[in-house]
Image 1: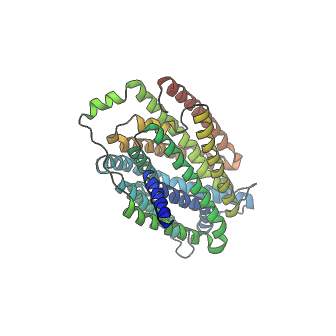
Image 2 (image 1 turned 90 degrees about the vertical axis):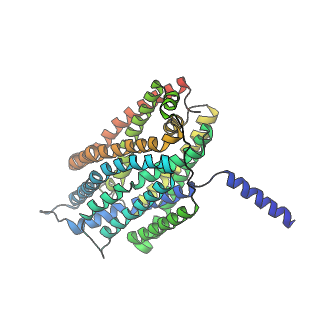
Image 3 (image 1 turned 180 degrees about the vertical axis):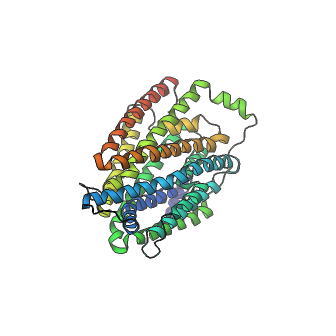
Length: 400
């Protein structure tokens, strides 16, 4: 009996090893930590603004809230104006390096950048250290040079594309990774909901930092660094793999990704600040509850997309953009291609910071919901572009 049990365990372990699980646990922890920080940051940032800025005249409580809210958005803009251009250039460099030397080092650098970013914000938010907001400029520069969170996600996508050459397998793994990301977000909200009253927002950030440091150490020890396959005649191969009209399709995917990042990046970044105002006046607990519900809906949507739309109705992949990037590129170009995709997101971040955040600051006193109408229009354009991509994908038999 004992021998049979041992054999079963060995078979189970052998099957698990065939799943090639490497980056998925990292994704889970990163999502958990990123969500935990995003939940505690609005109130911590508001408290910092109250210690830094004092209105020149007496303001009623709702107007005072808007005064500090505009300052929060202003400093978010200041950070992004410095960070995003640097991170764009760094993303190209790290993407090219990863195509030659492997994905592990850029991934680890991206992970360190997240840890450093948190350190700067913790020193600014904490009442004990309470360093000046101007330190954010230095933090934004250092984190940008190291690629920040987006480099990390780009490396994860490249890892998956390297591991799974089969488009169908890659498609399923992409969906699973996104589900894991949503699950991590749910757990991060749960942790904040249970810890914030016990150890406070800064205490929660210490827990986040501990989890990131442990993840970094384990990544150094466990992650493999397989080198991407080499191709002798890169130009001719590229021309063969990516004909002109499919390149146009790829650019359309990048454009859709740009609009997607623009709207949803703004929505995710703004919702925590927006709900500090009337009529919401959300506490950290209430914001955590919202962040708990959102990933559950996302997971349900993933399952629905995988089981109903993809397998039952044979629709194209929910992750057609990722598939287009991975399936239209050679393995020697995957890192650069995902880096370019990341830059589309970064450029969207610049547009978000320069345009949408500015619109919010200028209209919040006149009509605080105006920016949401602007985002609705952009979303409609993005949805139309996704429809075009779907039609072309079906016609050209791109994706699975």
